[in-house]
Image (cartoon, rainbow, N blue to C red; front, side, top):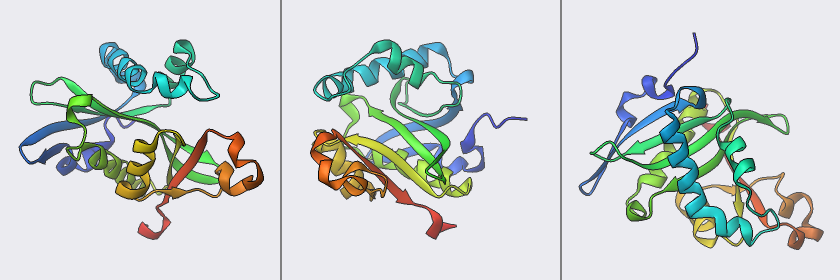
Length: 191
C-alpha cells in the first residue's frame, strides 16, 4: 500500500500559526492531487518564476515545466488558508543524486500576499523532517544566482549551503558560465 500523505506520521505539522496567520498543510503525491490544484501550482510558479527563467540561459517553456511539475514521481506540500484556498506549495521528489539519497526540492512558491509570514521556512522545515524520517542524506535544490531574494532565503534563513556538485564548487574556473547554484542541507547528522 502506497503512502497517500507523508504527514500522517506528523499530524502536529499539518497546521501553521504565526502572529494570527494560519494555514493547513497537506502532502500528496502527484497522481492523487486534484487537477485544479496542479494547475494552480503551475500558474503560481509561472507567475513567480517565468521572468527569472527568461533572463537565464534556460528560458521558459510551459510544456517542459508542466512535465516536470506533473511527473507522477513528484510530491507536493500544499498550504491552504482558512477558506481552504491554496496559498503556497513545495514540489519535491525522493531521488538519488551523485550516490546520495536526497529529497530534491523542485519548487517552493508562495502567493505574494503571504510572503514574509514564516510559511516558507515552515514548509522547508517540513521537507527536512520528511527527509530525516525517510533516512535521506540531504535536502537539495537549485537556485538561480540572480534570484537574490531566494538565495538569501535558502542560505541565511533556512541554512542551505553550496553543495559539492554545484558548478561553483566542481567547475570554479567556469563558474560565470552557470546561472545557478545547487544548494543542500546535510541530514546525516540528524539520523
